[in-house]
Length: 295
Image 1 (cartoon, one colour):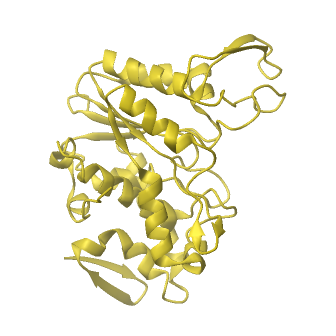
Image 2 (cartoon, rainbow, N blue to C red):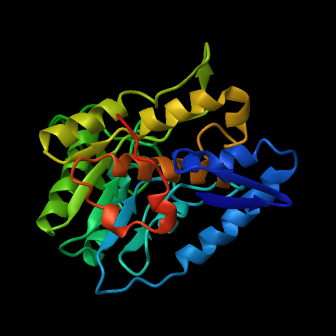
């Protein structure tokens, strides 16, 4: 059993309901703001932990849905830290807002992760929200070519002022997988988080075909894939459209602290359902309380 406090209200939940605890608190009028503030404080404390060089590390690489950003929005990568025992494993959130699989590599962010990576580490790879953007413009130029093939497009990048060969989404994902394996680390591919867009009682299962492409890349490269999209969408539909609104900040893509906490718990649930249980030994008490998901 696990206890969570919000103002003067105490809610006790079972391990099966652990991932819903923060959402349940939203049902109490006036509790949401205080709960978000509490999660924010915990998140900042977690980020300040120094990595222990003698321990394995979990790296989170992705975009703003995993990394904290402005206007009250929070990503799942920070609360994710607290589901693991800091005495057994490091968790480093290296996701960066606004990046696609392409620009995470071309801007050198992936090289920085590689410089920190060592044998025995784990890398959670999640991209797609920004890969559908413009391939070449003067503001972001972050889109990747659709699909997982070997197609390319040469451009003179209007943003960077450099010549560039743009590849498919799958090509960039395969590069990160291959680089991770070369370091002796374990890549784990995640499908996208879910946007708060509904139609006839069902929430959108991610933009475009990026979830499908992520799954295909993982299958072809013989690495682990977790269908985070389905896990989150299923939970959102259990809660209903009105309650899910409180899990988002100022738009339909970026979650509030409570929404980030829920997403983090569902990533953990996905990890716990894996047959080989690669990360179970590193879970904190909070992580152990999360019931493994079924896909």
